[in-house]
Image 1 (cartoon, rainbow, N blue to C red):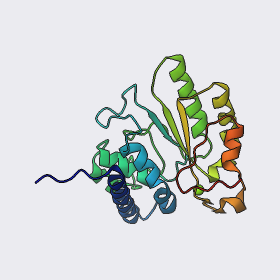
Image 2 (cartoon, rainbow, N blue to C red; image 1 turned 180 degrees about the vertical axis):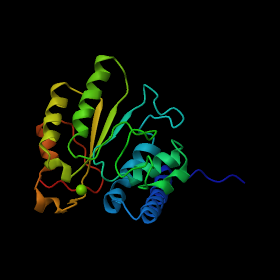
Image 3 (cartoon, protein in one colour; image 1 turned 135 degrees about the vertical axis):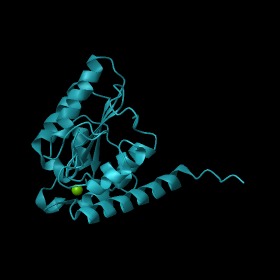
Amino acid sequence: MVDAVPPKGDFLRRKASQIRMDLLQMIYHAKAGHTGSSLSDTDILTALYYGGVLRVQANNPKWPLRDRFIRSKGHAVEAFYCILADLGFFPKCELETYSQYGSRLIGHPNNKVPGVDMNTGALGHGLSVGVGIALSAKLDANAFRVFVLMGDGEQAEGSVWEAAMAAAHYRLDNLIGIIDWNGLQISGRTDEVMRTDPLDGKWRSFGWHVELAMGTTSMK
Ligand SMILES: [Mg+2]
């Protein structure tokens, strides 16, 4: 008897649930972590890494033609580490060392970890670096793409908009910015801390092609 191949959506939903359980165990074990922010973008990361979007190789993390992924909302690293371990970039048992003294799995993305392209944590830097990498790919005629995951609270950083403007100026169609638009940041609701609506309209006005994920409501 051969099991039916599950629909992709079911596979992705189950994988995202597994990653959420893994990251909760990791945070519980470490007694440290950014639980809400990691749970928030698990679906995004699952789609990127298991949905056939990112072109990466777990057994060859420095493959020159890999797509680059920059986790600009670097404070929430747990789902990212769990996915890299699940894919075999490093042993899954290493997750138990998260946030422990001497571990390379520190509380922010760290490029000593296979699969991590950029150290991040201070918000607002990822897109600028992504612009530079995407521009270099164009100049070298490399076909890889650069994905940058940002938080919606991070949109209050002025450097995000300098990078957005530069990306449009250089027509970087190999750069994909993703915003985890959950309406929250560490210090409260984003519309109370720093209102950025209409966020999609702002990005369009900076020359970007904008797509809203299913279920997202534009706040124009
Ligand atoms: Mg947020």
